[in-house]
Image (cartoon, rainbow, N blue to C red; front, side):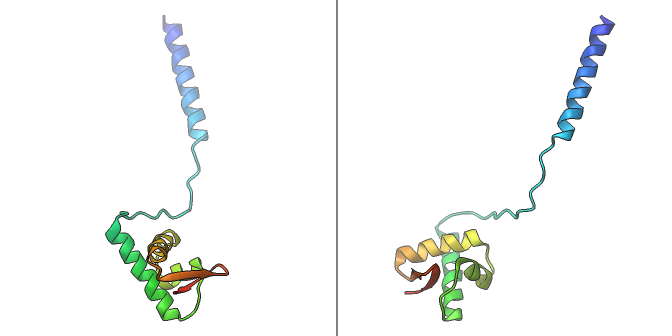
Amino acid sequence: MTEKKETVRKTATAKAATEKKAAPRRSTAKKVVFEINAETVGFKAGDVYQALATAEKALSVDEIAKAAKIEKEEALLGMGWLFKEGKIKAEDNKITLA
């Protein structure tokens, strides 16, 4: 009976060592965490609108996010709101006020 326990202990230790080696790598990507509701998306739309109004020219999505000091995903949400309202338009992958 002692031999069986020893075998189980060795197997469990070997399995744990294998699991430690196969640990997933951590991503350096930044997670965007915010609550998605009409109010927060509306605020992001305001940020996008203000960035475009201040720039007074067509901007790419990345340029809008940078100018508004928000993440790209947040800029896209705000742009969706503004597109639905007919406040912005797209030309040659650039966004401008309608």
